[in-house]
Length: 54
Image 1 (cartoon, helix red, strand yellow):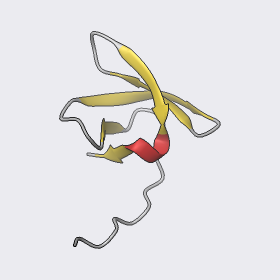
Image 2 (image 1 turned 120 degrees about the vertical axis):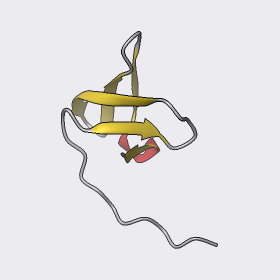
Image 3 (image 1 turned 180 degrees about the horizontal axis):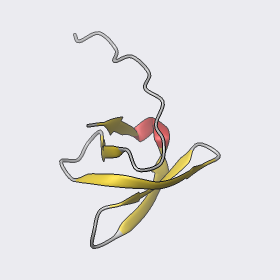
């Protein structure tokens, strides 16, 4: 079993991906634990807990 990854503070314009996805997007904004991620053709709002920095 892998050790847990250290917590990373995410901020606007960070390149991220959903933990269960291969698509990489950019954070447009973060508010109340939710991030708006721009994937180019679409944007989505997800919990910052589901994101990892790339």
